[in-house]
Image 1 (cartoon, one colour):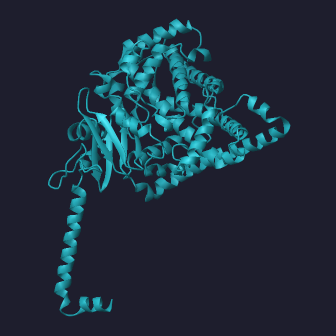
Image 2 (spheres, helix red, strand yellow):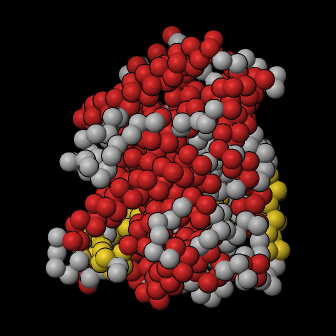
Image 3 (cartoon, rainbow, N blue to C red):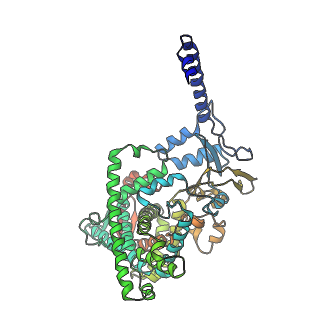
Length: 549
């Protein structure tokens, strides 16, 4: 150190020090230039992957993608630029600041990623940014063993025979809000009313998840505020908006330095956590008293009241099978995290799909007429019953599936390679087979939205809304690949609540369309915007409801 000090501060060292500074600065600029321009990705065998070439003297495609995200056109940029122009149409791999990312819309590649063991393809690190609200629920759990145990326990609660009480709630809450719509229509001479479906469907699905998750009941029909003031927890819409932002834009670190945003978010999250924790504590104490009054089997035979009961019953059943003590299988914090995960997932995804369904039926009156004809034929003017939700409405079921195809609730799924992974796929119907090996640490983005519109699997009319492609007599020819249609993901980490969502969608859609004809005026059509975050949804959807005779 003494020698270095003498060299730097002798009278003759100024020139040498200035030269050294210039050399260091030049090396730094060259390193940053290489880091920014080096976007080409290679596999561990040294083969260049489909995607952009290095851009030392040209525009970096990441700038185009960033601008597209700001315009809320990220999917279009991925399809047209990254996959279409720079990739081979099915795969695009690139490096961003030294980190490799592979984007794909090919069913074979997605099958390799999603059907693999969850330890081999864990979720990306940015899911950690959701723990502020979801804790260590099934979406964010970082422990493979704990996730596997909890998934096994919760699966017991979502068995078919457990669903009757949930279906009652679906129909009850749908009918309550339909009665509100009816009164609005009856106030006008032409029996019509214009409603904001974004707001109304969000209310219905929020109240449904409150009732089914922890038995908090809100009477939508007789509420003077439409259910808004009676919601016991924080602003779910705001918290979900925050979840969307943190997942859809991993470069958004502004939330760490914005005290106003953080203050409101913390207050809303604290309100929700406090409520759910108090409900769980009261339920655990109640069950503790019940266990002393009746045998365990009698408790398990009682009809569950909500998802919290189902999880607690499943813990007791798992304990009876020797998996551990009921209290240690899921702690109160684990129960809280799972309930909040159901709250978040059950609120926006179902509301968004319902909104898209009505939007498509407004644009396709022939499909809406088929829906009305099926409802009239099956129900004969009577209210829909629980028994009719399964299998009685094949065309409506097909329309819902087609809506999920064009507008999947979660359009992208992120994973990361935990080890070197070999990928193989066919580029086109009669195209060449391609094979490469991704390096450990590569980020993978599975574009479900673009997979569902891939002409290789869906034909030349892949962009067209056509429920007939899901008719029972043709579905074997239109859906030929097991990973061609995966709106609720697939593999071991698929959506555990997809059965819940399916019956809720049918119950609300049938109840609504039995009573109303839906349409969009030109003025209201012009107001619709497509918001693209984690969930893509039409916003400002003001639909005209007309009472059916």
